[in-house]
Image 1 (cartoon, rainbow, N blue to C red):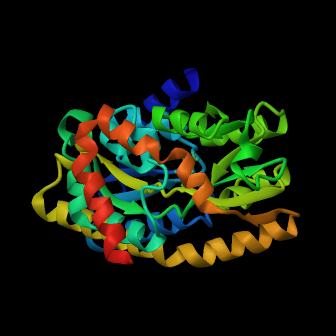
Image 2 (cartoon, rainbow, N blue to C red):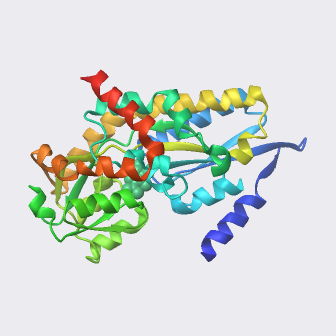
Image 3 (cartoon, rainbow, N blue to C red):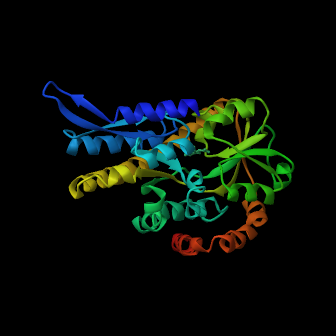
Length: 331
Ligand code: GCU
């Protein structure tokens, strides 16, 4: 908490910098994310910076803070609301506690293919629908990055649902994730991304779930040697902007920041497949085994959750229907 307060004050105090001898001031635009510098999210952030500074470089300087140096996503979201950080790349799961609409993507097996998911998250109408409560939330989703498919990885092989029984898995925060793990017969231990490595090491958890990059970038593959393609979620990272920042932009400036967001999405998507192929190769060299399973066995276990979640949060229905339509269109 103390660290967070200090970093909040530090970033607030440094909101403007004086550059050049003439004393022209440039506004610093802080973009925070929790990945390493080779991750597609970072490549997206670099594309964002390039567009902003090539068009508005006399007024704005974009500073990218990787590796959660400003704090875990859940905390930085508070700084975004306060306006001391301007952009954040954050998993939809981390936003669920602010706005239930974002729990859409935690619904297991919402998408039937990565193609449907990619199309859905690149649709500007989806971003608009997700952002309907942005005035009250204090932040606006401006674009989405793919984060691939989320799968279980563990110290012991998961070859069927039975292998999950009684095990403890780290999940991202959010009630849907907890319900999902219960439906699988396992226990959910929500915690921040940055805490997972030591939790695995200390055997606080038996495994976790993520895309393949967690094995290599976060070194989880040093401890967990079995990665199972059960494909339970496709949960994007969103680039969200602070309303305190957006509201002060002129319409022309806003246009450039939106163009930058679109360019960052393209750069992130373009980098994704190669990054996954590379991670699989590196993880294999680390001794990780990749396991394919009967995905339907896993899906059938948690499908009843769809009705339950929609019943609890009816506001999800239009977006849920749009995702179902994207599935049909991709077939
Ligand atoms: C992925 C995702 C992150 C998220 C992380 C997690 O790496 O890209 O945004 O924070 O999963 O599981 O916490």
